[in-house]
Length: 388
Image (cartoon, rainbow, N blue to C red; front, side):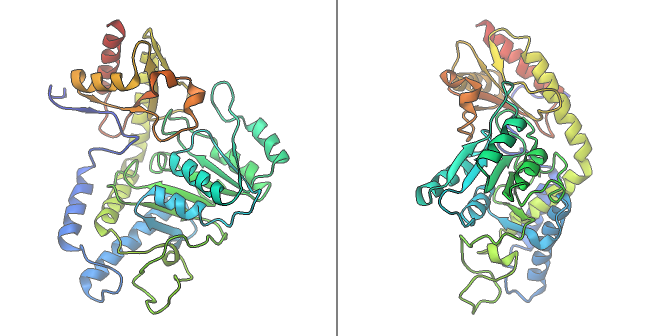
């Protein structure tokens, strides 16, 4: 079915999934109308029902990533807050070395550089090959020369869609007893994750992307005995006379009144994703490959293309004679296509791409509502712009 002329073609799923599945919206409406109470010390039925939603969300998230226990799932308002809890919770010592991929999000980069101001840790970027894949051989050598204390790896780049070899990197890191922190904001719900098998200590998730939940819900899954220091404190609704945070997870790292509406939306999103996972993966794979094939045919268009099978959902390109924000504006105003332009909260990878004189990239990202028709419309628009 063709879209109406005034209907936006949304191609910014890497920023957030939009629109949400109808079942997610219905469940959020139901919970906000009927169960929007504080679950902490409520002894009444409505509070107990709301608390069950939180427990079920932990269980679904734990199952999704093969975690040992649902109590290892820490719910927070966002992935960025989760990264602060993890990275600031590490007992850093002067001279400790943390490795991060050049693909990391600023939630990781800025937090580490802020920590470096207080403790003189060494922040080292992982080496890349000419094709912009992680150079595992060179990384292994660097680990042997400068031992890692912690390794931060994003699973799917929010700029290029590159699927990083997190399992291989984690195995190298574990030779030196390093903590492994994985950013799964773009991958959870789309790619299979086994937190134990992949040797991941802390895995961060965002509910509003490939879990198809709302904003205001994120967190991390801990599969490690490492005792993170407490960074944020507050009311937990339990053990209230104790002036210290609880000793056990998840209460040790959770605080304030839980956002029950967002949590309910995330829970329904996870269930929806589990029912449609194979379809979602196949669709994103096909649309990504088609987009790459068609962009390659357009003169004056440059883009980052990884080896086949190592890129999904996201394609960044830039054009001769245009600033990237100009392309985004024209796509919106003349073609009603919504994309993201600029540097995408990932400061380290853009110098590798070589598009800084164009003001960053035009990022196209697809999701459940995307169609081959959307890709063809985007390609046709870029062809038109290239001829102007």
